Amino acid sequence: MTLTLLSLAGDGIGPEITAATERVAATACARFGVALAIERAEIGFPALAATGTTIPDAVIDRARAVDGVILGPVSHNAYPPVAEGGRNPSGVLRKALGLYSNIRPARSHPAVKTPTGHAVDMVVVRENLEGFYADRNMEVGPGEFMPTPDLALAVRKITRENSLAIARAGFALARRRGAKTVTVIHKANVLRLSDGLFLDCTRAVAADYPGIAVEELLVDAAAALLVRDPARFEVLIATNMFGDILSDLAAELAGGLGLAASLNHGDTHAVAQAQHGSAPSIAGQDRANPGSLIGSAAMLLAHLGHAGPAAAIWAALDAALADPATRTQDLGGTAGTRAMTEAILRHIAEQADR
Image 1 (cartoon, rainbow, N blue to C red):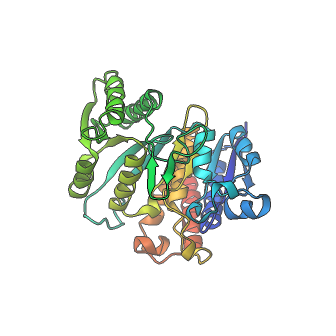
Image 2 (image 1 turned 90 degrees about the horizontal axis):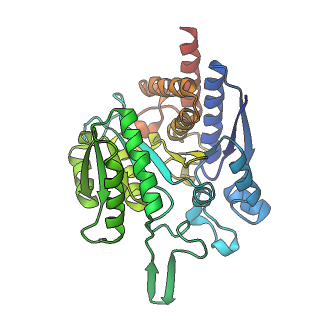
Image 3 (image 1 turned 90 degrees about the vertical axis):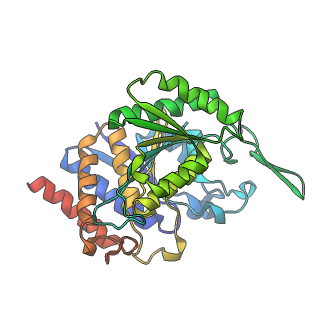
């Protein structure tokens, strides 16, 4: 049976790192005898120029039909208003495919210097469909509005359904990782109703995991402790905005966003997506680090039941990072995008020869 992935290159450095990711995924799958078909479609500025929207309905329909999606970074902050076709493809896909869970691991590598000198190995499990994010938290209309020119309001949406869903995803992941502690991030001392509901849901799910200790931390305290002692954290469960912020902090503490892999998933669909943005200032210069999206594709393959190719990609990525000549400049190396990709492909081939 053929595994079908839809590749959406996006903007800025997106075409470079998605091309690299496609090659790595295809090579790893071939090594394990997994038949892989990669389809491609345009999103972002190329789609806007061609169709009048940054994510055509046909792309959304195709994303529903395939086994998984590789989503390149997009320059959504530079898009025109939604009424003029400037929709955020990431937010649109998360809502359309029901991708309530955003899994963001942060793992340091021995050869890559970290800001604090600490080893880091944690996962932030971020709720993906609600919170303050205006592009996905309402059925009709945005979650932000301006009653007058001098007043802007934002609605924070927290539901029992999605709070339970993200708590279940987080505790199940913790069990698979053998984690001893799950840290639940909140601000219930101020957001008593919304974060109160979120805490009630996580506590209910925690009761089904008696072997895992639960720590509840205010988001500001969690940020401070991440900087002071990141090694104390294993799995963090958070609402949308808090998870977004803390996962970027964790990624930087682990060595940088260039290695920050990420998987969006729901009950039936999954999308691999780098944590970082489109970096238009270095687009087309062979400077982009492909590691984040390549790692995200490995997460996608594992999620879809292909552990062998996923493990091969992670091992090859680790091997490339170990040598300054085969890792990119953001990680203290000297390689460009293409050279780092070739090194990863070479390491996958060498694994097969052993």
